[in-house]
Image: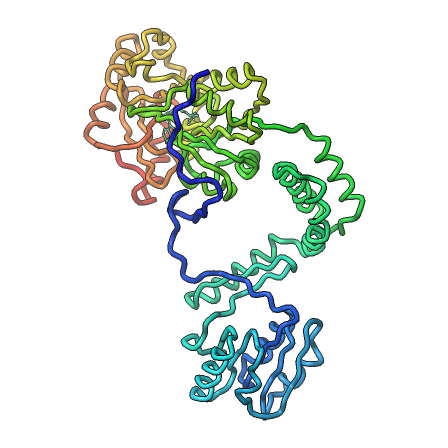
Amino acid sequence: MSTPRIPRETRPAGSESARGAAGPAGLEPLAVLPVFVPLQGKRAVLAGSNGGAPWKVKLLAAAGAHVDVYAPEPSEELRAVPGEIVAGSVTLHLRQWHPADLKGAAFVIGAMEDETDCIEFVAAGRRAGAIVNAVDRPHLCDVKFGAIVNRSPMVVGISTEGAAPVFGQTVRARIEGMLPRGFKAWIGAARDWREQVTSRFHAFSDRRAFWERFTDRAFAEPDRVPTEQDLAELLGQTEAAPKGGAVTLVGAGPGDAELLTLKALRALRNADVILYDDLVAPEILDYARREARTMLVGKTGHGPSCRQDDINALMVQLARSGKQVVRLKSGDPLVFGRAGEEIDACRAAGIPVSVVPGVSAAQGAAASLCVSLTHRDAARRLQYVTGHDRRGALPEDLNWGALADPSVTTVVYMPKKTLGVLLERAIAEGLAPTTPALLVFNATRRDQRVVEGAAHDLSARVEAAGLDGPAILMVGEALRRLGAEAAVAELEPGKLAI
Ligand code: SAH
């Protein structure tokens, strides 16, 4: 076996990634850095008694802090707080604060009405080495509070940096809904069992497999309290599971990440290494787990490419070394994806291989145009054809009779280089020149564009449009119905360029 050429690696193992719109390599700007402050058993001080004080005291105590409150004239609500708390402790001192009160404080909050007093207090807090916050005075704060979803030990914090508090609240409510209350018990069990699991499984992949099973169970039965029997079963299942690397060919779909299947998502989350084609939309990689290595292999366009043999060899080599390898391919892996060769290479090497289907470009394009590819009156048959052969020329052996068939919808993948000759030849072979024909660029992506025409003039229209990106050609009477739909689609700005 030859040594595989090393493909471009977009992110080294273990490196940070934004997982944001910037794609796998970039870190999008963050308005604030979310950090989580452990306060269990630590001292906190709040001075003053303005409107926000009681809630802040409760929060500090809920996080396990021992809170000293200095307020000469506390509100009724603040007076009631020490009797309401269930964690930490709260002591109310009916006097002004003194700098000496801040000694040993990990967190201090200024809640006084008077700005000067507050400035003095936060300065003293900083000198004492505490983290500083001031109620309703963001300019005095080192850290700010966000909205919280509490499934302790899992805690979700949400900040809009003051830009949209109501929006933040709504997001909070949605996340509350997504995370059943029972998760508290599961996450607590995870904490309790962690040590046992770690000492039982030495290999990272085993531990990961255990926690994936655990998480599946939690999602399946969120409201059941996990038991020792769960632990025993999950340990047993993990031990019995086959070990070693494997390859999964995963369909990434045509671009829109929401078209990923749940299985694809799971495979991406499980992967140690992801070998992806350049036609895979960058946002798809955001769904990989952060530690996964992502490697760009192959260039499906006309540029230099990783040889298929190199990709096969790399895939096998990684799986042999025990990695979970995802071979991520645009659309459906089994449609014009050379998946057959990759499957054969795995089989020949004795590597377990499986396939997760994806939405092919044709399906994605048809859906976004709201047009049926088959129609009782117009198309009894649907065919996928490649527009070029190994050399990039029109394939010699296309079935022209089938392409000229009036009752078929034809989708041509990789059509751009040979569009003119393909349609010309199809017409010469009997295809009606007025048959509706479209070229869909960047199907399902934000920059999707459609050039509409007929078999005889599409090529000229495409040239005039001067568009770029992956494209498929769709030809057939069934597409005539698009006319009505196109009018609707045109309402969406920029969707159609006809
Ligand atoms: N397995 C893929 C096809 C890979 S062949 C699938 O099932 O979709 C590569 C060709 O697919 C491209 O040349 C182009 O013709 C088509 N293609 C892939 N993604 C596309 C997209 N988002 N829009 C239009 N065509 C696309």
